[in-house]
Every structure is written in structure tokens, then in C-alpha cells.
Length: 77
Image (cartoon, rainbow, N blue to C red; front, side, top):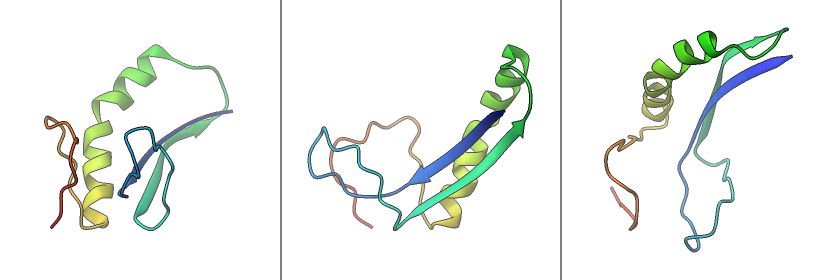
């Protein structure tokens, strides 16, 4: 079985090495699930739409993904 999933989670980090996932503001969608092998062609198509999927999930959580701005300091409001 192959499964491709896009997930978005908004949470505070305790430090720069904290990668724990908080389920308080978490959303996920499966973009493909089926039998078979990995396919470069299928992955290329899915990767082209990954930002739109992530943006839609973020909007459903009243959040925004800043694709071109590194997240270094906390952003409030």
C-alpha cells in the first residue's frame, strides 16, 4: 500500500530542536492511497499541488503558511 498525506500543525516549540507534534491545531488530508509501487510521475503531480493542499488545511485552522519566510521567532496574531 502507498499513502501520500499532507499535514499541517500549528504549535509552539520549546526550543529549536523540539519537533513534537501537537494535535491542538492539526489537520491532515490523504491525497493518494492505493496498492502498487511508488511512481515518479505520480509523485511529481502530487508535489505540484502540495502547497495548495497545505494552504487549504491551514485556512481551515485559521492559519497561514509563509512559504518564503523562515520561521525563526514566534509570530503572534
